[in-house]
Length: 160
Image (cartoon, rainbow, N blue to C red; front, side, top):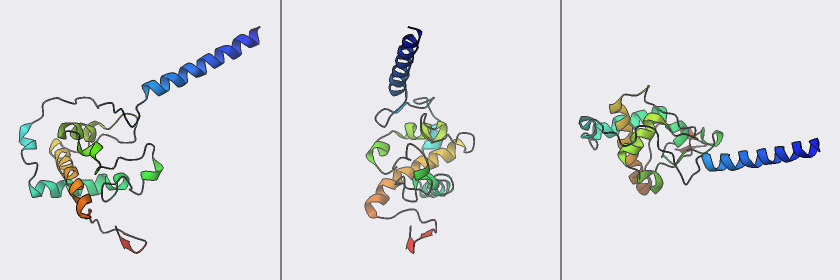
């Protein structure tokens, strides 16, 4: 009788924990927004959004911090991409590009819960994070034109 009770209790516990993990953990179709999404931001930082210098500075930060996971072209195929779960986002796709600048800024700042995307709030200033958002907005145009970030890497005889 005791054994039956232990087996049934174990099954109930396993089913309950599986159900809760499926319901509580984020998936690809539901993103839990990072903290501080929707707070008002300093307008002086966002007014320089499309300045070519801003895009270039964002490109430099992207090359230093983001390329290893998100890839040279923002396609999510960086050299570390296959080592993390879930895979890094393709920054060129509509799912990312349709997010507001504020949401992208918050993700860069705080990271994303349930993913390997870390927040860069402590390493980058607010202006630097906005420059990254600005550069990310150019990635969709690069996809269409076939141009990517040239950081000078060579792989298998092909320029990346």
